[in-house]
Length: 484
Ligand code: GLN
Image (tube, rainbow, N blue to C red; front, side, top):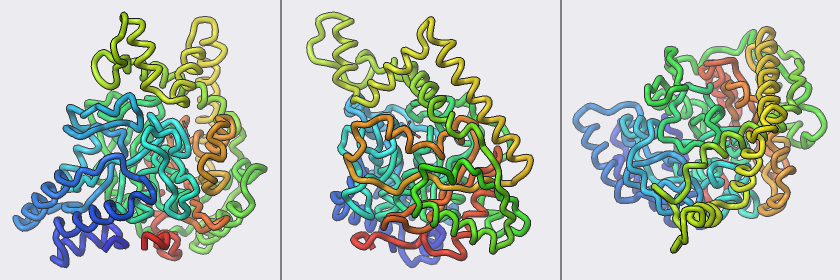
């Protein structure tokens, strides 16, 4: 049952092969017996899941089922879920029971999806390895000595280990695509503003975007149909028509112009990853795509620009965690200052503190123009680079990450080495573009994913290309042995 895609599960529910209660129980049992090997979940909401599933079975019996009714899902623990602990991977929010529901999870509930639980993540989504989680690192289901990627590493591991058929993630600088690549699943980062950020705990508000993490592009499309769209509660949500993301999955790729940025295949890219990505691109060519070398000259500037802008926004967003209204508060504060300093000192981990310090510095009087303003100007140049590229090509293809999953702890204490891992994903967020990662093969014995970047609101096209690629390859069907 757990190797079925969403589309297959929907068929099974429809034909009565199994009920939602049976399906949900199956996944809950798998989580119970297998999650100790991967630590993908922070909370499992068994009782709620079973009652939602019973409800879904009733809805189906009454003839009111949607395409997703009765299918289980796991949510990244960054989405507020009413009455359920929402920790964002931090000690700061270890005691936080969200009093309201995020738009993304509410839309999932309204589509009849069943929440299995909340997944592990880097603290406040800051990281690329899940090692900054207060709840201990998630381990890669393909090799439990390796990282799963991050920050949506729990969601990626849950889907790869078949502990959930689909999951939500968020991507501020690569956090959907990079763990998808490292765990061998499909992940879509939508255009900024396509999916509501309301109720999603903010890291860097001008970059954060939620999206699906799934086995297949088709499954990701099914979830996009549920979560995309205008939300008046999010002022950056965009009011343009929402596609039917499953409608164009089978369009042919003849004549599709695919740009290959020379900067994405240069020094720093692991040779065996490069070989995998090149052969994935050849598959697209076989289906009629036309390849064209392009240049995204600002690629290397994305790291310094992002690591000023994201911390700057984070330092502002995280000022709300002060022990006054919610979250952790230190014991017996002497006075207000003592409460602020000890609460924040105890509640935040090292990486979060590092970002707050960098961000506060970059925004301070005297440095604002030199760092923050300059970074915003570079951001504009990065965006211009993409706009120019999309005059010549329909999509851009390349690797998602320069390496495959590396050993847990291997670069944990080297933040700069960690930041360099984000080289192929950050520009997309700085420009606000959509991008998808699809499993493309194995390098160094670990999965790696092809990244396709689209023009604004071209999610349908990305899903279409991903789907066509998955029609002729079976990388997305591979399951780690002990989770088969
Ligand atoms: N690795 C990047 C960072 O640490 C991206 C994280 C994300 O997308 N949430 O900021």
